[in-house]
Amino acid sequence: MRKNRRRTARKTAKLKKKITFTGISARVMMSCAAALLLLSFLSVVADPAKAWFFTIFGLLFIPLFIVNLILFAWALKRRSKSFVIPVIALLPSIFFIGAYFQFPSSSRPSIPSDEESAVRIVTYNVGRFMQPDKKKVTGGRKACADSVRRFLASQDADIICLQEFYASDLKEVQSFAKGIGKGYRPEYYLFKGRYGYYGNVTFSRMKARDKGVVKFEDSANLAIYTDYSAGGRPFRVYNCHFESYNISMSGILRSVRRQARDALKETEHKMRRGITRRPRQVNQVMENISKSPVPAFVCGDFNDSPMSYTYYRLSKGRDDSFRKAGEWFGSTFSFLWPLLRIDYVLLPHQFEALSHRTPHKPYSDHYPVVAEVSVEEQN
Image (cartoon, rainbow, N blue to C red; front, side, top):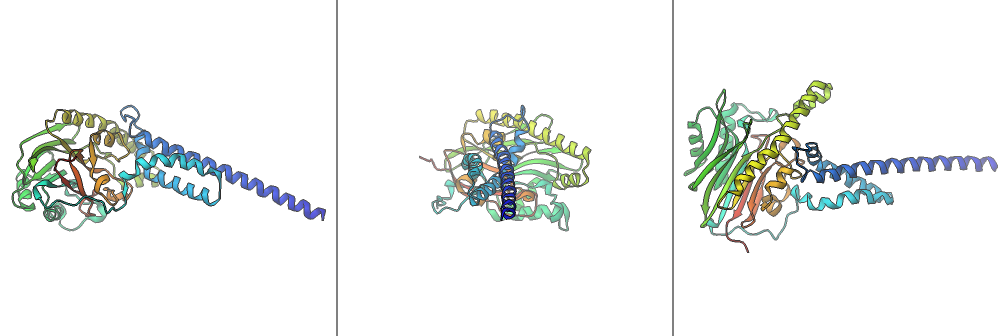
């Protein structure tokens, strides 16, 4: 009997020790995950020019959110008091998750029958018509450009903002406009490269009342703006392409697999350069917007997630078409769907977003954004 009691006592002690170790490990894991998620919230206010690494935490917001959600469910299932740790980190997420995911709603505003009071805007980074490696088809750039043109023609958009547009000569810009549909006129700023021209182009059937360009220092990225009027309401559209990381997902994966220190160091350098340049470019655009005599839309490829200084600055005084009228996932970067949303249509508070779509077209590593906006005066 005594031997059995001693054996039982030893087993109980081992079990308690195991439970204690598991509990401590779980709390440490929860604390780390919660701390990282809380750091991601700071990415919207921390100036990347001074603290660039906060942007990385912002990029990881969705994975960190999911990890904390899993740990919360695990703690609840085990009836552990540690569930409070992920809850503390998850609560502020309520204010941010809507920029990535929206449930369908029956209360969405209806599109007005008066065509003049509704404007359809498309923004699309066409990646110089060089399709991603896994999606390339025969015909090269020309075939890709034709596919993009046919897609744009099917959208019957009033304003089309393209980034990384490519043309072997400037005549192609006009022919591309004619291919989209009758009456489209281009406004553009293209850099001359070794093999052709590339940059931003805005197409519209509406007459441009004014236009301009915001050039960024030491960069091939830029923003162009054009003034239009619809339904008697004048407004300005900024077509932006902010600094990218200039790295490919395949390159990162190869570096990790080979544990190539030099390649990883170069990747880190490129990321830091892109992160620190963007706030300066955003400030230039914001300064230009402050001088605009009419309400301003900001569209394009921001190369930053909603958990970023870029998005926070540009969305001040504007509504996000996805948050107002989108459904399900808003991700626009095909390689990391549904984690990464970097293309936007931001509209002045005076206007109303009626619909928002991200058609999954394979012609670029970005998905296009199609937003319908009412330009009627809102109460």
